[in-house]
Amino acid sequence: MSLMDLTKKYESPLFVYDTAVIKKQYERLMGAFNDIPVKLHYACKALTNIEVLKYIRSLGAGLDAVSIEEVALGIRAGYNPSDIFFTPNSVGIEELEEAAHKGVSVNIDNLDVLELFAQKFPNKSVCIRINPHIMAGGNLKISVGHIDSKFGISIHQLPHVLKLVESWNIKVEGIHMHTGSDILDAEVFLNAIEILLNAAKSFKDLKYIDFGSGFKVPYKKGDIETNIEHLGQLISDRMKAFYKEYGRTVDVVFEPGKFLVSESGVLLSKVNTVKITPSTLFAGMDTGFNHLIRPMFYGSYHHIENISNPSGNPRIYNVVGYLCETDTFAVNRRINEIRVGDVLCFHNAGAYCFSMASNYNSRLKPAEVMIHEGKDYLIRRRESFEDLIKLQKNTGLFD
Ligand SMILES: *Cc1c(COP(=O)(O)O)cnc(C)c1O
Image (cartoon, rainbow, N blue to C red; front, side, top):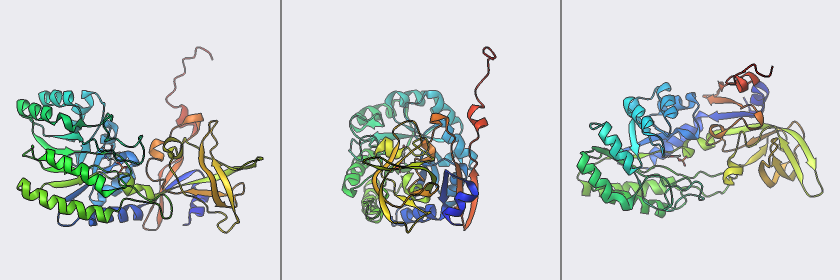
């Protein structure tokens, strides 16, 4: 079925995900490393539909969860609790306790919490999230490794970590870093790895070292992306040297979110209005930042294609949403002539789109469809008005 046919069948707006793209990316990432043991934990905050989680599990991945609800989704999707890694920030100790009771691996990013957790779970191994203070990431909002970041335990506090590990006899099974999204330069990433490996030498019982994620994908033709093959080669070489120093091998873990699912997804949306003002040609969509917030939140570029009029004369558009808010998807974008009723396709809508969707303006969330081996499957029905109000209680006071 073509994307146009899918829009007719399931209506607009609609998210569509192609499992073949997820598989290609999974295999590409696994294939980038040679002769070192690599495991991938899918960072599910990118896209949490349970069918997608199940599919990624079937490829052999574990799961990286950042909330207890994501842990529960992972268990629902059939992940073994021991293959789920809980990497939260600023959550209460109760949430970590619940994860530990479920048998999930817990990644701790706070000195006080490390001590508290060790008191409550003296026999449970933990992973420690280190902040190497390397400035990675496309912009400050997605960079989480810098000096002012709330994430991780500062590398400068390593002596303090070691003191706690010794006095509470904490079993440290892994160390972790995640410097942020959109790694552009392999050298910068390697610098962070160097810092983590240096810290790793202080822990004798490691089972894995987790380098997080942040692999950048292209958002348009010719866009820069993380050269994963080059990076994989550099990391493989560096790890082999580390294994010699450390005396044995330990698993290398990555937590790709965007890399696995971004390019697998599109958002299909109908054109409600076309408006010519003295300065600008607007295309007004039946969607807004309630469904795709990345352009407004991060300034992200999403390629937009008019799939109903692919050979129309290109004109220059501002593509905007239907919210009572300035929700601009694209400014001065060259797109084949747009007519009312046309369907536009927003690319790279697999990661951080549906999972960041809201009901702002009391709008309903779109349906999600998965394409697998040439067939289309509805994996979330469109919300209804009833869904929107089902949690509200009528007091009867004003009826
Ligand atoms: C968000 C997140 C990731 C995934 O980042 P991507 O840029 O989507 O690959 C990985 N690890 C942790 C701890 C995260 O919070």
